[in-house]
Image 1 (cartoon, one colour):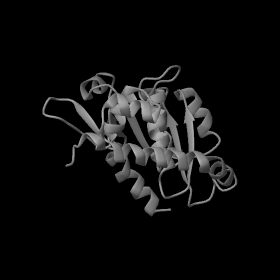
Image 2: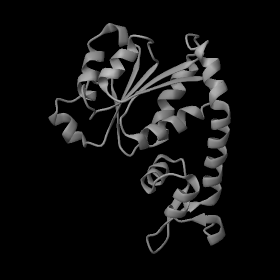
Image 3: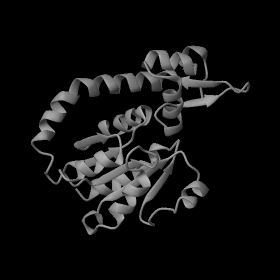
Length: 204
């Protein structure tokens, strides 16, 4: 791996170029969005090329986002559109998930809500292919939301993913989750999402 200074950035330099927080850069590294490694001294270095790639993809996404949403507004009920509902009140993870789904090669109808209550309201408007929910949220928690969804046959074919900063022991202490629910412990990798999304896309 080439670690020449002119081809690498520090975490802070990457955050300035990308216009995001240091924590966001760290999460993007852990999710595989940015290519990074640690020096012998323990300092993280980030590939300049991977930062430039994210900037290019984000600019392209920004330019196309309005047209994309306009087109999807009239086609979101068609079978080839992947409908994704995300219940997450953490802005960093919302941005991370938006980046991932906006860069898929399939049309995506992406809806964000901040808590379980808003999620239930959204479900009354459109049945998604995937529901991704944080477990710790105000009003209606992810635990209560998921248990409700699991008890309704309407959502039997909906892929449910739980995001959490808790440990498995913490989840178990709170009563656990239904077996069919995938649990991603933060920070998670995009590779975990790809397995599920690729399977859904093949059925579209």
